[in-house]
Length: 285
Image 1: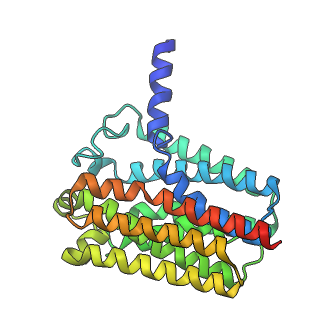
Image 2: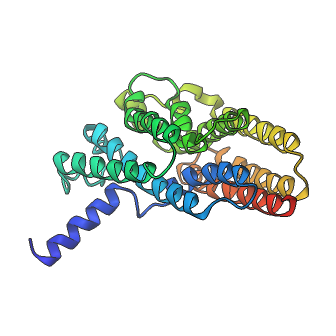
């Protein structure tokens, strides 16, 4: 293999893992940081944070590869995904399987540095990541399943009731932002018989997105009152709320480009909540 061929292959692997599109990593990372910040009272162990951040990157990458393996017969027929490496055969199915296994193994090695309960929970996380692509074949709202998978980083070590509330908030958030994402592929998904929340909610999809955001913020408000948080935390939620209002104006006309912009801007919602939480905990403790 020449140097040029090696570069092209590595570039294909990068795109297969979506490392060129870090939005998925950020959407996974923000709720994980919420849990780590609360558990560490604003000063989480940097060793634990490094493990979870690295694990987030590895498992998101593995999940993308698994998704493309499952969707390889469909991606070439969808405008947005037709240039993915498996669809264009830049990467073989065998290579993709080995890549997914390698990434999952590296993530598991990281988990082995944590406690026994977290190790056991990691198997459930792997099952969620591997099975999500298949849910699009039979679940009416696969985005709900995605929300559990994306929020599973919240569940680590001892699992207090607060962690389950955070997980539920993340499930509603994932349904909201991934429905906006699914609105981009609505026509293609309908032709291929693939389920999505955008198809399930039909003409009420914008309302459904806003209701999911309302549920998410209701839970996070409850968390704030339960933890007796103050101005920084609620200011972060307020900024995030303004960003949701901005999203409404983007998606209400249902234009594909605007729906995709709305999806991408969810990272700013996560960042606002995380910064508010971080400053609140640093002040409190």
